[in-house]
View (cartoon, rainbow, N blue to C red):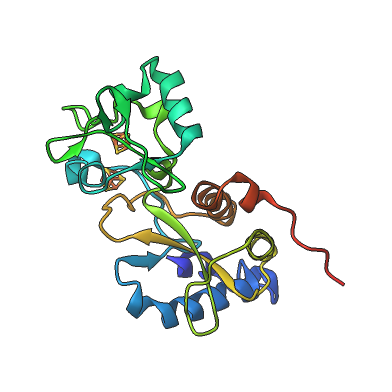
Length: 220
Ligand code: SF4
Ligand code: SF4
């Protein structure tokens, strides 16, 4: 946990608190938000990192969630497998079903789980798996002072991520959370660099490359 980073007396300033004001702010925001986001827990610097334990949970996430995909993900999966999309998407008369959504396609299910899950509980298309599968079990939320989730635009997300990297507080605050149903948080503690990389990569997968990578606005 975070206290492991503070065992010895530290000089004042940034090194006494690895991410400065940002860490305190994230903890305060999460304390205000936690009651209404009961399926998640805050994931902070010093917390155990993620290592998939599919054998322990019988591939829980691949069984309970339906996975939606956009066009680019369908293309990536088709390239990785060499399969026509109708082979791995919910389809009718040999044509993938397209819902009127931003991510219109659904991975085919088999029985009570993803149709691409092997009997060995491993993903059968790991290199081409959809973004939702790469994202889980991490998520990034922007939280207001009251702890309410804020829908980010490109500027607010980019500036919140930039503030997290410098250890500065930001309004709204970007917090990294983990899904409590996943038992995989048993790895070595996340150091600051690993936590920041995970925050950025999770934001990129969750909100899209262009949104998460946009340069923050210039400060006056
Ligand atoms: S729930 Fe977590 S540990 Fe289990 S298969 Fe999914 S990611 Fe891996
Ligand atoms: S594509 Fe792979 S990782 Fe994603 S739900 Fe299916 S089996 Fe699991």
